[in-house]
Length: 461
Image 1 (cartoon, rainbow, N blue to C red):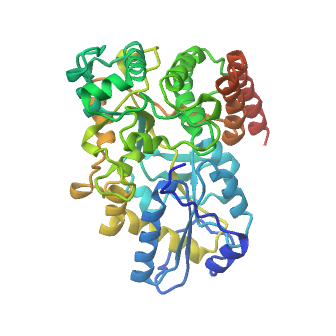
Image 2: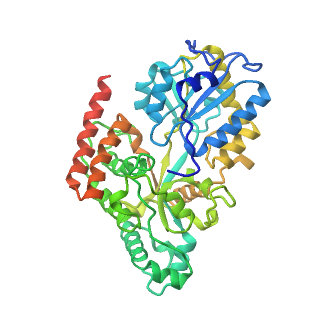
């Protein structure tokens, strides 16, 4: 897990103390009244650990400005749904929580407040980024993200120029999985020679592929999402709503990419589930060249930040997760699983306070600066113009590839049924395969059979 992310998981007694005034009740579906002066309060259960400090700072500013109490609690990596279920069951429940997909809407339907008349929905530039369910605008996307393979282009350029054995002449030569495999394999096999020739301090090509709960979502979610995307595309179904049946048609492609990750890393494959690796730090300290993750990582590599990383943001870029299927036309994976949902079971005063707070976040200078600069996100609202347009270099790559005619990969993993359970059942054989030489057939079997099982279970509810 990232060393800068201190998880705020509060005991019940602490939550009750901090959230005094966040009562429960039933909203009438109408946004009304002013929450200023302390008539209501706000409790956000934050989904993204890396944004915790920025949200804490915003909450403090808003409370100082308005007198409205805003409390932010951040769930641990990979533990959001478990934490959410626990918190929603309490009297002082979150008034803002995150929903990732329409599957979540079905699960939390009774808590969903209709946002059709809210300011955050009115300001949404692309209404497709809102989740509609059961006749309601259930959730509004709060950011628009992309993921792929982050890479150190400065090191790669140095490798091409100064290492006589380089297998490519230019970074631009990496346009498919075949070439990426050759480059990663060569770098990992000749680390010492490359360091001597280039003055680098590499220990590996790919940063560690952690299988612990703080990291495995990158693969059970994001890498699996590439397989799902191509399956759904072949089936002609909605790319983010998915379908009951997945066959694992492209699981051999998944295996090829996964083997590249683990075979060209210095991390001991037998201990990938130990939680002892920090892939972000490996890239940040310029020990690794490649790191699968998303544009939310951009802020972590800002010059002079608390991490003490030696890499510069300007040295980094992002390429697609080439999958050996349609590499020529593939762009970055673009979408979101971050949607603000307002708790319909909260007191109306708290609902009103919550809606006003969210509107302040997307319209005030403090809020917009935090989203764009402190959190490094791209916001899908018409208020983010001029100085508040995204400065995220990875997001800019997504736009550039789209302009070149590349097809952005949809976030098909959003269709995952009973997401935490399915991922856990998939990671188990993936760990067995990676750490103890287990069968890949078991990984593929879990991928498809567990999908159908949880799909049926979810839709029976």
